[in-house]
Length: 221
Image (cartoon, rainbow, N blue to C red; front, top):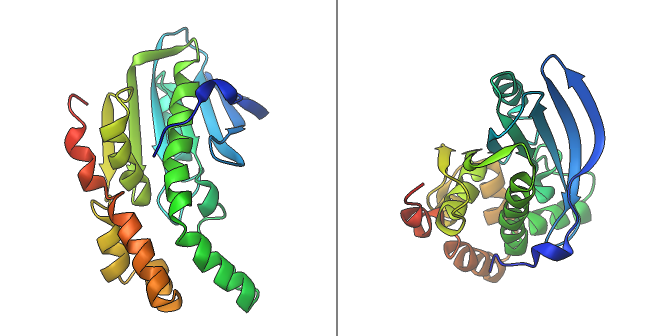
């Protein structure tokens, strides 16, 4: 489900680089294994390597800027950090309400299981690009995710042995259960506007991706 051919994909493209005291902030993008390009921030200390690295994944109502301050702090301590943005949640996960058709399209996109899978693949690609950096200590790579970012991290913990430490903050062990019961505005909109058959398909597909099925295989991370 999450497999793809790495050798056919391009690496980091630096859009802009800003020099700070002791580190550089790189505005980067890279090719998604599925489609489109992934936007991210890559913080690289000026120190000689090998250096530990941290991947950050934002919650549903966040973006790559969510952990910007934390990344700056870690950069001063000698950590390389990669802040990835989920393509389908770009724009802080805000719903587009300019018209009925666009609203319906947005709800459909948020219930597109392939986009959920794609985000896991996008993170895996980010891990690969990090490990290819000469400065990165491949034995010291961590993942930090919050909310839906932690749910994706839970999946990664069971399928990717390159991550040695996981910090999963307020994550959904069963995101399918959250979609069925939560009073979160996004979950309520999906339940309220998707036709019953479409919602049932969404939930049955999502159950296969519940982090609880994967995180039990995280050891020795």
